[in-house]
Image (cartoon, rainbow, N blue to C red):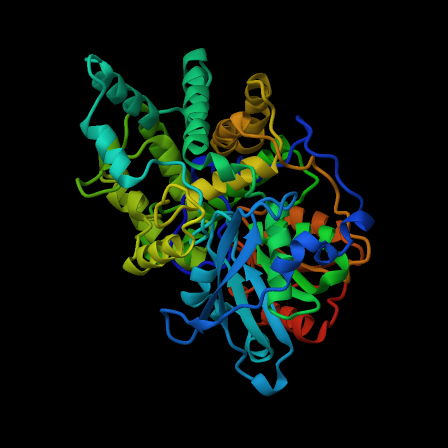
Length: 560
């Protein structure tokens, strides 16, 4: 799934899977869940884990002034931590601004899965925290295993040199292969948002299988070790390495899944936990697709209704009806033929923007209406007039020189972890790998095709596109738990924050998650966009900060 590089507190799901890849399902069974009491056992008491729990971070100045960086070593396989195979994870911190009154470290996850925490901190995400929290805590984050600067890191693509060689040296004697590839690319570009015919479904299944095989080929040795349960165990190793007896944590979007898993495995190690933009672990994959896709559909409806209030004169229509009609018109055009783009556009090599790309761009803009609705409006108007270049650029990600340098350094420092060098931003690969591993999916095709009609009824093309995107997970190695309600006996009160107009993590899931936690608390933010803390105003900031600093409870029915 694509992400925008602008500062966003929670990078959840959008794009290639658009909607469904955070789903949870009972269609295939994962490992039997352990009980809360068993999960509460202290893993640091295991002799083979003591070297990891005993490490202390060696802080040095980051490349960005004002931040400190370190590296954390964790076992690749917690079942066999002494086999010498590890992940080395980048960690960054911003020191408390009021050191005399410092409480400790606050660890956060910015979302994803696939978003690097260390890099997000260096980009200034600590400024999303309230002044009271920044004064009393060191703000800390890390790149989860397989993500960003992790060594090794996930990739589902060949290294650049390998890809160039493959392009330049086609197999001898296969004269028709270039024509076949061109045909496939054209078919992909105009793939329907609702695959109804056997041909369309066969093409979708084949493409998904190829994507899964590419990940297995280039990241096979680590694919089974990048799930959220293992990442939560890394989080506990980080807690110990920071010298903290208990964890203070804030997770945005996917970070709520990471936090929930930590609370289930280490309930008595939690000091305070905020989960903003929640993901409900009790939903199966199909329920999750419908929940999230319906959220995006509602948000696009909100855009049509409230565009004039937020984007002003840039709106691409004089009424909500005109805006809805324009968006639908673009989807239909792009299904027939890719929308034209300039030669320097990311989509030029595909012949333009296909329907899925258009839907992704529109959906991405629902995350932060205050920042994105105006450029979306201008891009939609120009696309309707025959130039989709601006629409295609809405979610462009720019690889920075710093990112490349950091990754190269990481690879040099961990030569024993031999793996293909990933692209500077491996967010798409990580998102697919983590979600598919976390969430059991059906192995046969029939459940996906059976899900299309209900998804269409509930969320239109947003739902059917989400179902189709789940096909990649069909061929993934098993590893996730089955859908379940939270099992975290002994955890202190957890604060869940839900935004009523959230596109990616619908408000209803925050309500459900708060109810599942023992003494769970819900703070409702009545607004648009994805997540609330850091963008929901002074009311949200004050209540979250009071909880994090003083562990002040939020009253039932609290609303901002």
